[in-house]
Length: 156
Image (tube, rainbow, N blue to C red; front, top):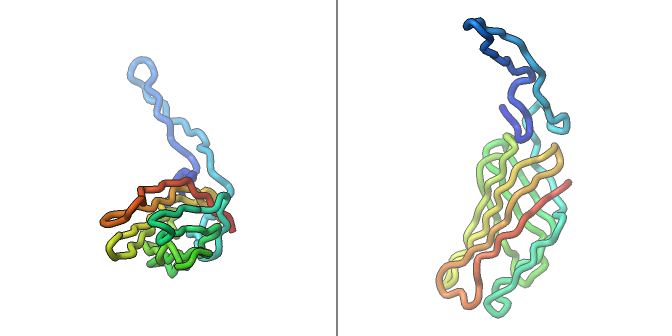
């Protein structure tokens, strides 16, 4: 597997065409991110966000306010929940494919008169840190709610 920031092989063959059609096969070391493990990542854990996600609209019916996300990864599915302190837990429980390869892509939708969709896309930058984007989007009768996209970085 190839992890974000990690070169898939530790040495890269460099082929240089020299004069008279002669080929020179030399090798050169490629950089490797030493902070990423050689084995698949273990994403399960609680991640504190660098900056809290706070967004309110629809006269308070949508009230996002959280500063950490809990990941549960069973090597097939990644489930993500927040520690939202608002009147109702938002976002909903986001799900996607396992993040053992270093890539996070989870989403969920609260359906109703206003459909609220929450989406986190990110990549691990080390064994205990990920960075990406959290997006809240709204369709239907959502009053003053508009798409909100914020950078998100989590560390456990």
